[in-house]
Image (cartoon, rainbow, N blue to C red; front, side, top):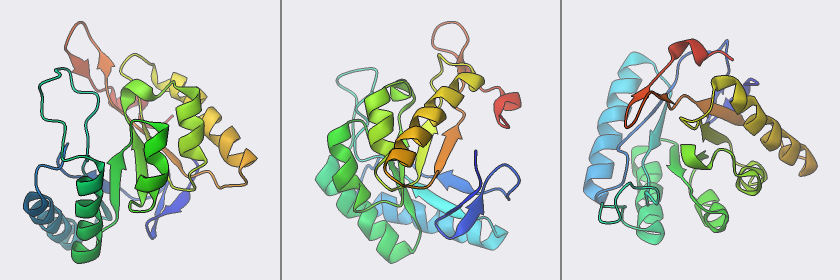
Length: 189
């Protein structure tokens, strides 16, 4: 990962720790505000840069009957309120190219689901959004295969005359069925 400025602080392999945290999915406006407020208080007291993360829609749920979220319109309203009232940068997942433009108007960082990390057109569109992107490593890839994802993103950014603002998030590796194992040795690639 190249070093760059993210939400007012420096990120990169030789930079200090920062935290992306929050509930997997937005369940309500009040819970989002409460959680973001608590996380901000904790990280501020520890001097840790913080980005609030929560999804408006988890389109990749295992079961079709699982709660997916509040939807893009309501979810983005809540993320905008968290950003405005709590005073923290926000990150959310996108699952489709059509979501990039409206989501980019609200959030500070885009995040891709692990299962979409090899979708070239999706990666290119994210990279050309002008926003920093956190690419989640697919559990079916080795850490070094994520270099291909970053290479796709960098090439798209160069074509659009945009900076390299890309991160990789360790998502684990499949170890048998329904078992993910995080290999912390893969973090500094």
